[in-house]
Length: 452
Image 1 (cartoon, rainbow, N blue to C red):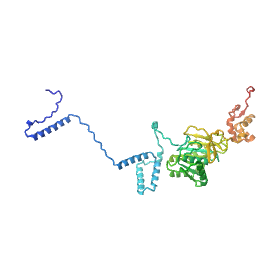
Image 2: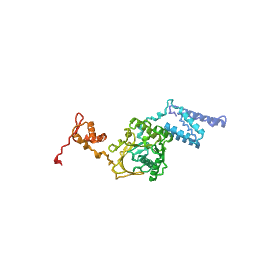
Image 3: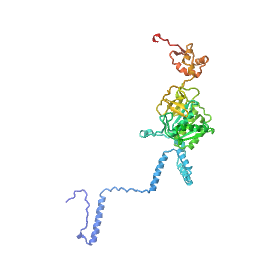
Image 4: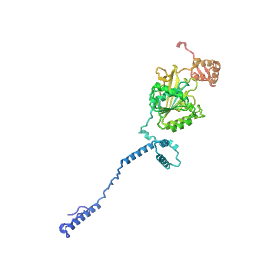
């Protein structure tokens, strides 16, 4: 019978018993040899099988597994801190009294060894400039810091508390600090309990401590989360104080650092009306907020005189930076009601907040909904002068604004400040006109008796 395959198939030729001439043992050896040859021929005619190596699994001891887990956690921790914080952490560990000298030396050697691999031109300040791509923001959950004051201030921000002289700014900030340290309401707003540091450069130590004691007893606060420093008489302006705080205050140690009053911390030569000077001063506060992770809250004063005619954001004394830099500005102005104040808010990170009224009788202060926040205490000169005082003079002849101001000064004793307060509205009055020479005049509108 013919073979239909193109190639002859190998066959297994096992010697038969009657063909064996050397007995049973010889026949057995011949059969084994034939099987080996057959299998070799079969393997040569087929593709080589794929051999999957067995994984080289090394069983870790419990101690090794613990070490691997520790290293993984350490890597994650290091990736989450910058160079400055790493340095601060190492310094803190080295100063730990419970650490033995051998471990201290080993720690320093490890840090030095690691720095050998940094570029020669490495500067740790370069770590402050990190360029990030925003693509991940589409899928990443962005962590929001705690709201220390509900709808008003986040932890890590800057807040200015501005008020007129003798309103009780120190009382107010002490009340805020104690409220934050105990999670109590402040001016009717909810707060988040956190540890606070209050820096007092203005009052004598006994005076400050008496106020804290009085407020805490009135509120029923325990003060475990309230730390304070009195710097009066120590010559610690911000350029000296803030570096000391950076050394003493650990990141995350405080949720808020309060400074009262801020003018006592100006570096020598600082001009309150200079935008560049105040800008540099605020940069120092930013640095403190960034490295401590705390909100920086400070008090500031108004310009002299009644400020009710100005926008709330413009009432602070000094350069315009006071009204632009802080994330939150709380402005307190005297209300027409006795011992009452209107509180306005200028907010960067929150929706606009309606003004509120507070009633003050320190150490007691409370939100009072019966107070109209828009009813600010009027200035004394409004009873003496009015827009009509200017219009009556303008009816006689035309004046430039400067001439008119001088005329009113001589005739009525009206100061330039009072004049220009009214002048912006007088110019818009019907019948007031200006000619090509910038001279103003006023013609009273004719009244139609039929309309009376």
